[in-house]
Amino acid sequence: MRSLSRTNTFTPGGKVVGRPLREVTKRARATRRSLLDVPYGAGEGEKLDIYLPEAVSEGNRGLVVALGSQLGALPWPTRPLFCPTAMPFLVFFHGGYWQSGSKDTSAFMVNPLTAQGVAVVIVAYDIAPKGTLDQMVDQVTQSIVFVQKQYPGNQGIYLCGHSAGAHLAAMMLLADWTKHGVMPNLKGFFLLSGVYDLEPIMHTSENAPLLPTLEDAQRNSPLWHLETAPTQPSYPACHILVTVGQHDSPEFHRQSREFYQTLCHGGWKASFEELHDMDHFEILWNLTQEDYVLTQPQVICRGWSWAHQ
Image (tube, rainbow, N blue to C red):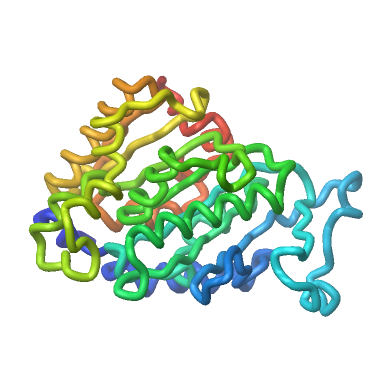
């Protein structure tokens, strides 16, 4: 299986392996304890899915809230979403060139991670043309605030995004959390074949629904912000893993390496990996595998520091 991303500058994610990944999500919903379509904001598209591990310790069993009629009768966000134990949370943002993709087909890593004690949150956001990039960034910010407020005892929130989702996750490095009244317990970023410099998109045929002006591109480019106005890392111990597939296009390689280098120059704790014999979409399929290094809880909780480092 090889995608056009080997040759194209940018390729919308999710079309090549869409059907198998939809089946993976259906299986996760059928076999894992979950809260689906949880509103994290007032907008119609501002919803997320939460998948919790099955194991519940005896000391915390009383905290588990029954997912019955009494829970459904409470308005969000006042419904209690007690976590059975303190555990790490992986929050995933799907790709799709900001114009396609859905949380309903994005539960790739749910089964391998929840089986090993990690809670997984899959976030929806308003894709173009309904949503602008500014709105998407704001929605992703809201979703993280929601998770932190609902699960304040978490053992760390780890952000993961693919392609456009990696861009949205990277924008969280620039977020002003003070205006939200909470400082999320961010411990790691896992950025898969992301886009960090949006100016080149202005010169593609897909530009119209996304970036009408240079100012829009710069305002939503984490690479531009970190290069032009370097700031001290707000999470100095937070590890950022920037990855790209060996067979991703040259533009994805350029952006991933430049973003990694910019992070290092700015004092962020970052590492870079080129994933051997992977293209833009095969990376996602590997997240469904229990024996894949990036779905191991010990790897996640060390901020994705690799065994050979």
